[in-house]
Figure 1 (cartoon, helix red, strand yellow):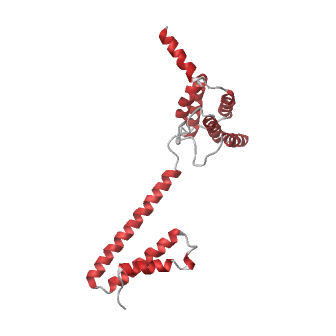
Figure 2: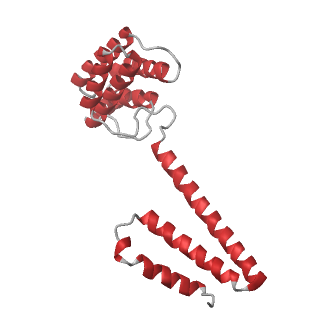
Figure 3: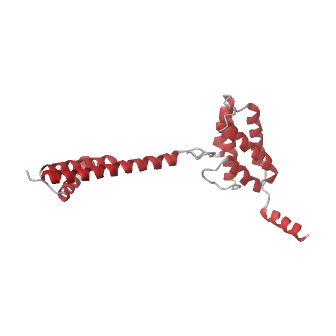
Amino acid sequence: MSPIDREEAARRAAAELLKPEYQDEALFDRIYRYVMQFLGDLVDTAGGGGSAGGIIAAILITLILLGLIALIAWRLRKTARRNALAPGALFGARALSAAEHRQAAERLATEGRWTQAIQERLRAIARDLEERALVDGMPGRTADELAAEAAVSLPAFAQELAAAARSFDDVTYGGVPGTREAYETMTGLDERLRLARPVPLATGAGTAAGEGGA
């Protein structure tokens, strides 16, 4: 049997993959089948080409395998980066509404899981402010960044927002256990923020201009 060249191997592999039994196959499985068949044909070709053909085939196989390993590693790193939480970030991968975060906080509080309840309550505050367009929906936002941005529209709450951010960071990253008191403080802030109205920027700018003119 005469060895086949690369073009013929590719043509045969393509023809094989077009058969009806492969139409429902997952894309990755089809690619894997194609690569393995190509490598098999390459080995068969090298077997009929003497020592020089064997060396060339070995080099090609090594390069292909290295390429596949690099591709898999790249995909794994990309997936890990997408799924991982940014250091200090408020939210996880799944997006919830403010109401859903509040429900989760109340359920956790009922179970006495104060650390998680505090986390969910601050997430409810953050999502509520986003839904009301008082802060931007910035991915990877930290609690401190939330407090600083929200204070621009709600300056009367600046100190309480900063304290809430510290409470979140303490229980999340500082190893400080959550307490009922800390949760109730966060809940009270959430309820008052829901009723608060932002300071009009135009009024603030006009006041600043008036003070400058005086």
